[in-house]
Length: 211
Image 1 (spheres, rainbow, N blue to C red):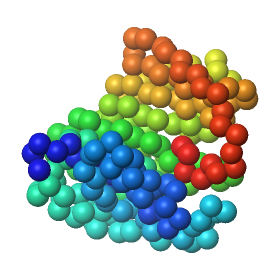
Image 2 (cartoon, rainbow, N blue to C red):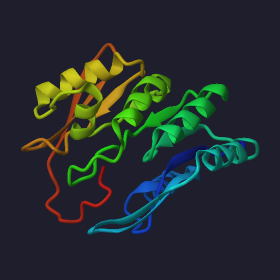
Image 3 (cartoon, helix red, strand yellow):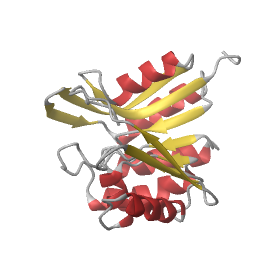
Image 4 (cartoon, rainbow, N blue to C red):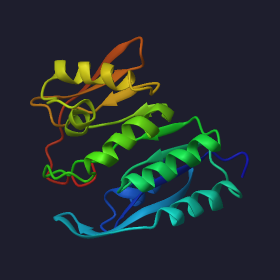
């Protein structure tokens, strides 16, 4: 498989198929990338919400990573829902020890309804251990607010949040603007250049997993 691009998703399972590892694998496949997956949690959910979550043992998460990398390998890793501080520590350790540099961190920590999905201790571990290893971090506005410790409600706030998140040690950040009023504006910053990517909104109620 050396000639085929490979990507690993480390995330939760969405039984509804709209988010989590299911959405990642569909996206990988759409771009001709062979996808592998490491489950961190199993959720019972559909387009209406989440009814149950089972977090997997951290050592099982590590074993999944080791099984994939010892055989198939990967060219890039994307993280999603990491569930708790122990799993974040395990993932950060594996990424660092195996020298993985193409790491995308989607800091899944705030549900669409505003509920926190990560406790403060886990957010601190994410901020201190995993973000500095990443090539790009992709928070939405509520997640960016948690990372920087203040409200992020405007384009100006998003730009400053992007600057502050890169200062945490990552190579670049995309602060997603789906929660802004008006057109959606994503803010990219790589430590040198700030770029804004604007798109008109799609008029649809099918928004599950759109992050």
